[in-house]
Length: 47
Image (cartoon, rainbow, N blue to C red; front, side, top):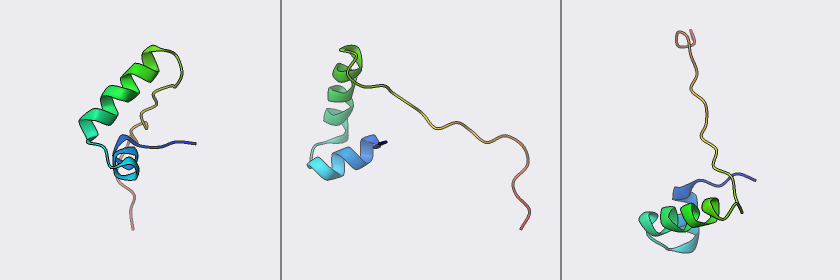
């Protein structure tokens, strides 16, 4: 399951900065992985 920082903030009612801090602590403890979506390369799709 993948949850964004913004989604977690909205779901918990916590501030985004607080969620980031808590996620950093969980990452440091090795309990979660951080994944960023990759960028798409090349020209935009033609419609």
